[in-house]
Image 1 (cartoon, helix red, strand yellow):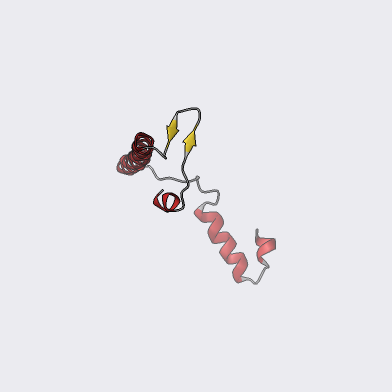
Image 2: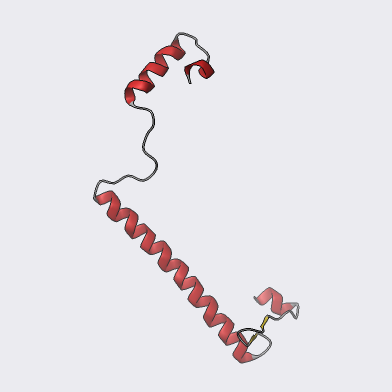
Length: 89
């Protein structure tokens, strides 16, 4: 915001009656920006807590594996026989 202020650029919201060219408007803008930043930080904290809780319960994120260990071993054996990867796939 300060780089805009240095250039004489102000924010005016017609719907919310916020005008950063006035002290009250700047205050309102900064309060709203602080609330938005806090909400973003809270979302990150809640996400991390949820992931940690899931890990403690033994859950792992991501998709389920499509290839079993047996399929991976079979594919490696075929690749070792110099079959092209496209054929192995």
